[in-house]
Amino acid sequence: MDGVNPSITKYDLKIEGDYYNQLDIEGFSLMMKNPSYCYKFYWLEAIVNLITEGLEETTFDEIINEMIANAWYSVLEFHVHLSGIVLGEVKDGLERAVIKLSEISGLPANASKVEIKNEIKKYDSELKLEKEQLTNMVPYRALAGFFKKVDETADWESIRRMVAYIERVNKVNILPYTLGSSSKLKKEVYFNHSWIRMIQDNAVAILGWIQFEKVKWLQNNNPEVPGLVYKLAPMDEKMRKLNAVRKLWDVALSLDTIQDVFTDEPIDPYKYDVDHFIPWSFVMNDELWNLMPMDSSLNSSKSNKLPEWDPFFGKFLNNQFVLYRLIHDSNHPEMHKRFEACYKDNIHSIWANQELYRPGNSIEEFGNILEKNMRPVYDSARRQGYELWKV
Image (cartoon, rainbow, N blue to C red; front, side, top):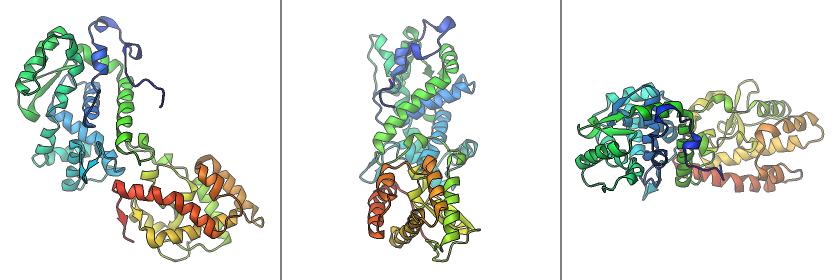
């Protein structure tokens, strides 16, 4: 995404009809400028989602519920930290709200938005403090880009005066929303009809812009996490490309006995799964060097947990070297043919292509290359909060 202009202007949007000259698109483009926390992105995203559903007014409470549902999958399935960690503590209030709801409700990481919102309502009193904290500044700060067109200075110290100030600004420069007089989570949010039309006409472009800005923020706060752009919403399982690797291991299992990494029993060629040593939900790829055959009955319990490095990596390495040796054995041309079929989807890492799978490696050389490249990825996943699997 380098070189892409992250701002959004009139030229990016389909602005037609009687609202063309009324709306301050520059002010709208500043709604995500200079965030202190990630929930500023989720605030605007929630508003756009609710407007596209046809709402003309809502409350802080409903917007916060939408934010929690939208952040759920990234935080719980992929262990993405929304605004980083400070002294071992989660910095972002939205992330804390998601984690608390997960702990008290027991909902899984892949819960649907309807399930998440039902549980939020069920545990509303328990979540009150976390939800109220999210309304302290963002609803007001998000509109700051529109205030440049008025001479009066905002009084950020008083919510009551800010609500009145927003009303006065709205008479000079039409705002996407104004606020009601109720307190805290019950505070009303009124969407302007012209902004409703503009947002509904341009929802895809606006949500794409929000995602672009969100990914930049999240990547900066999760520098060790690979494939972050894919970790904002539930992924389609069909994205996984394991067919060629499965065929490669099928041939290997017909030629040699492969011990299961976790049970030490021979792999049954008719009862095994191809799985990732470091979870797919962290690496977000199906690279051959991270894949192994394992007993089908264990795969579901492993889920997206990390195997303990010792002793399992040594056993994983041994199986990988058996596969490597068979690939380069001239007596088994079918193995090399199946290996070449993996190039398209399963062998993209430069180090694997140029070092790991080159002919002539001893088991010591092969092991050193594999460990040198896998251990940092494994350690990153551990630091990110991936749980160890107790076999």
